[in-house]
Image 1 (cartoon, rainbow, N blue to C red):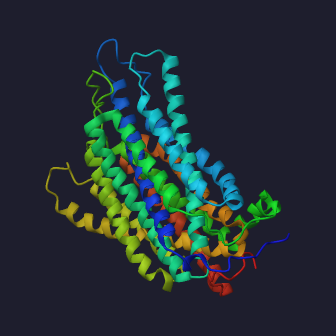
Image 2: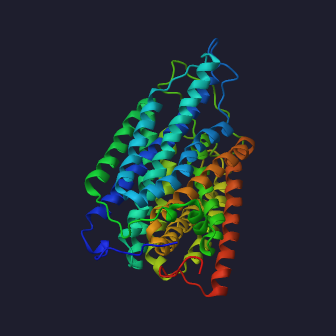
Image 3: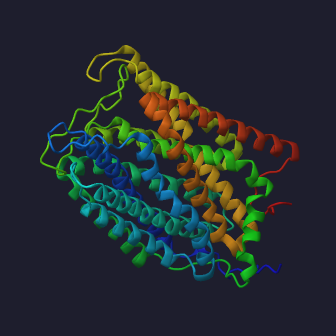
Length: 476
């Protein structure tokens, strides 16, 4: 197979930094829009479930309930298009450049939130209306997935190409990308909860403006920069895709990355529903039925929409501070070492949250809770190192496939989406049986799987004395 190795005469990062910063800022607002949508959909489903359980005569219908398993299926539908679309988008990015696909993602997101804002269903609606309601909700999640499938690999391919030949800049910008992603999502969660409390379902319309701002920044600020132009269709074949995925560097990383991605699926697609006691504001004239929390679990259905947003905001603050700290040391450490430490952080944080979940009512004083909270905060900071380390690892691999950079970086979206799909679906029965405790038990399992996978990866690295220098070829 012929591989084009022609590069631009001037490395991209020697030019103006404005396009790179525009990519990061556009990503920030894209993630903010996704964060708002993520918490709004959880609060919306929780409120709908409460409405459907209303005891008001002629309104309640016992068949109209939304169990956690159904929540997992609806939210996981996001990843169907993200998975399938990431491979297609990666190929298109390599052929046409990343800019147009960076813009397309926020537009998909805007359409999704506008459709969701128009959805409405009463508890006494006919069955066919209930089915149509769920189908349209499913469709909006597919559009959200298309947003991630196009913009994520495009932005990452852009950053990987921009930082080609400068490993320190790549580590730093990869950290900044994760910070922009995390802070954007965190602010989205905080803002989304407050928008729900203030506007109810109308908040979805406001989220469309955030997506529009992201698209505008990508359109105005980003210019197409490609180190290598793909000229051979064979380089974009499924055979080439399989060759990259089965390479030694990725083969043992994939289980760990899937486990961490599944953890994100638990947090973003189940935790909101389990924490929320959101009333069906703006959904109907009825007050709704009482939400039944799991006995003895402090966090079970204990928070309003704004409070749920604050919980995620605190979690994201710890995650963001951790990424900032990891960014400073990441260039001087083996990426597998960072990922191993992060996996241990997942396990510790999960047990700490489980302890907090059994410390009495939220308003009650508890010395144990005040001990566990800083432990949880520090453990979340520790676990945050996995994604930037894995992202740098993947960017290094892309150097051996520079003509297919978009395809390689599309693996980020694929693994992120597939892991969250698994996590969202599998966590549903855990939550149905044990509520918040069930989710935390599942998170501990994911942390263990990740640690085992990275242990195997690190063992092979030490045995072969293989570093992670970008110049090394994949599969050599």
